[in-house]
Length: 366
Ligand code: MRU
Image (cartoon, rainbow, N blue to C red):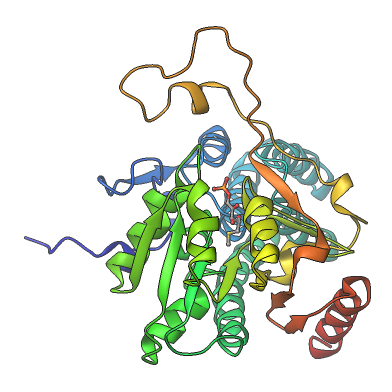
């Protein structure tokens, strides 16, 4: 009998090209059930993103890239499609549809736009070849994600010392990316190098990504992780148990304002009170220089039952009560000690330092 794989050995998102499918770990079932699901239709891919079966900004981007490649493959096979114009019209419809699955993580549109550029730059080529190029680009987006997370891990690790207490919110771990995670990358690299961090994971209401995913993946990898409720972060900080906060992000605006899982701004506000630095771990794919400030970031609102009923044996709130359920909040840039990208650490003023990061990116990719 095949030995049950450790969760960390399973790809968060994998392309099964032979069966024209994307295989994901259904994250809504973790930690108690490790179920792999195979997504073949665009509707299944859309639903998997919307329902958070696959989640976390980079993993959403990778799923979208594979998804829109599969759409291209299917459109090209359709015998009624002969020309680039016929192909691209249908492809753009599929792209626009996938792009509506979740609004806040900019990696979704970033990955889809990157795939569109491949179509546009190769419009003269045979459709079959365009499909192959889309395949290669999607695979590159995934491989790049691994390199990016590793680089963020190295920069993050340079900010802390062995034995430090680190706090994180939500899951910006391997389950949210292709490997290492972003906020967890310094933790994993530190663990490999004997840093013995003490990690606090917020449970992250209402969908419990911290309890179900972060605590699970860190524990599975042998890290020292302690689960706390969201309202306990002030206590562990006041006790002097936290030296730094590392969190991920779904969209960073040009001025450094950062949208991340709801509750991040509370953590950052409390951390400021206790002089604890808050670092945003941000692949450049999550930095949106076309959004000037956090005020322009579209914050996703999710259904009421996620708060009133989900995870409970019976409903825990009165029927008919009004519910406000934003999935993300904006942490103001003045609460952020640094934005860790794969090109280095941006410091305030972010308007300048983020521009410099993109300048460096352009130069290094020339
Ligand atoms: O709603 P989710 O679970 O997709 O929210 C995820 C987060 O907020 C993560 O912190 C963010 O996407 C960064 S993942 C590296």
